[in-house]
Length: 194
Image 1 (cartoon, rainbow, N blue to C red):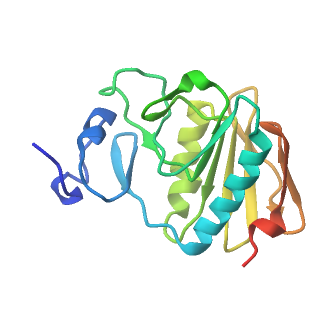
Image 2 (cartoon, helix red, strand yellow):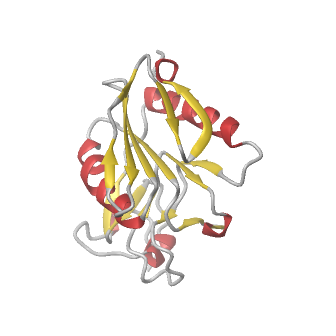
């Protein structure tokens, strides 16, 4: 059966990446442990912040093996090759991938090195709890949660035990750096300009 509307799916059902690939509707969704999560259309402010980070990352990654990708871009957090076994497909606002073997024609198959999520009204619980857990379990080296309202970036780095460690918030006036992209320096004030 062809699925052309999100309403045709059971909101309490469990789905796989194989199912996801067959859907032919325009709504943006992610799969978190097999459950459908609708994605809201990003605001102008969200897009401005995303473009600024994209530009800075692309410039810092020039002539390195790492690449930056912006949503919509499918990230299958596990390295399974059987689409029927993949239960989690996310579309981070931005991600940096340094291992080219994780890239295929459909996106990323495995954990990106860096994921950036920009909070929008109504999605902070998902970003803060559900995705935090998923990204930690998958082995994402660094996860940034960007709050446009607070004009702050919360940085989580994966430690040797595979757990995220939160660093002090990076706020306006600070310079944001990361070991994932050694030559990146982000003036946080400029990212949040109106």
